[in-house]
Image (tube, rainbow, N blue to C red; front, side, top):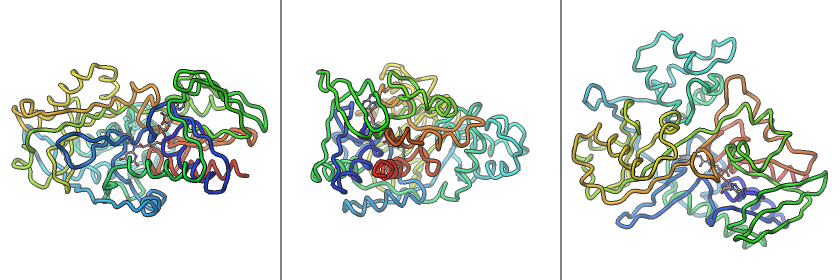
Length: 406
Ligand SMILES: Cc1cc2nc3c(=O)[nH]c(=O)nc-3n(C[C@H](O)[C@H](O)[C@H](O)COP(=O)(O)OP(=O)(O)OC[C@H]3O[C@@H](n4cnc5c(N)ncnc54)[C@H](O)[C@@H]3O)c2cc1C
């Protein structure tokens, strides 16, 4: 397995439980990839810098949480948006779904921006639909396939209750990593793979393990590299060029901020999500129903693309400006600590999650197709259902392991 994110760990677990030797090579010094749970002094609750919610049905995630003995906490969905300086109530998911429902009549795929321009809907509905595409899907409205968005949003789960793993996704993936090792699997952290050579029935992988060159040989390899990493190289699979051109990796920047006190509770008690479409970080949320002086500021899609690669200080400053656009001046002086994660700037992710470009339906299946029964592909980008989620990554790992087992 190349990569110890949700997909790589799920694949290795499947193989190790069936008594097969599984070697997992992970570039980072931690497992989890785009699931990254941290602790912040002064907070009782975990701080997520990657995945946080269990979206939709996510049967595989719930089953694994149960097996690991980990519980979930429901999240509060109450939302407000900034309208001419006032916070007003909104159901952003419902507004966005209203627009997406109209895509059922499309005769050919177009970008979501072009689709929205044609619709006769209130400006607010269009604004929320665009914010959802940018924030929730991390996509550029001028590039993303409307068909793919309509398919995803028509599921009905969008806007339903979205629980969080109580101890964070880190606890779940840590448990899975331990299970792999306990079943005889080999997990190497700090192992950066830079080359994969293969012919039917034989694979040779090479790179650096803690700075020293290494080579590993096997009958099969399961590649779980993020889409953005596959697109950027240096590891390349020419057979996947066409599929990679039809997908894009969406940028997201998250800033987790601990304040000396939760100043928002007085202004908007019981509200979890705040939107301000003009702000650099258009969405902020609280950990409700868990109570803690923690605010997450989120920028996705074009807004994140504009900020990616900026120094941490500038990102925190932009996050505070966004918070002040919602709550007025004052929060800046109350900041106690901030963690920033710019996923596009991270060389081992190169984006937060994948989306389908106009005309690209079917590309995920193309990306998932094995090469001569020897090299298999997993990862959130390879699943057409629940794509872009932990559930998709977990499921893809199990699927690729079963393909490898024949
Ligand atoms: C900010 C953010 C918020 C999200 N929120 C949610 C959410 O609320 N709910 C949800 O379900 N999903 C969410 N997701 C998506 C979810 O995190 C991903 O879909 C999932 O974790 C992807 O798992 P993966 O195994 O496919 O990829 P990854 O987790 O990226 O795993 C790939 C691994 O490959 C490693 N790697 C890269 N290059 C190399 C190399 N050359 N050699 C060796 N190893 C390498 C990486 O370090 C990484 O560990 C979110 C993602 C982000 C970024």
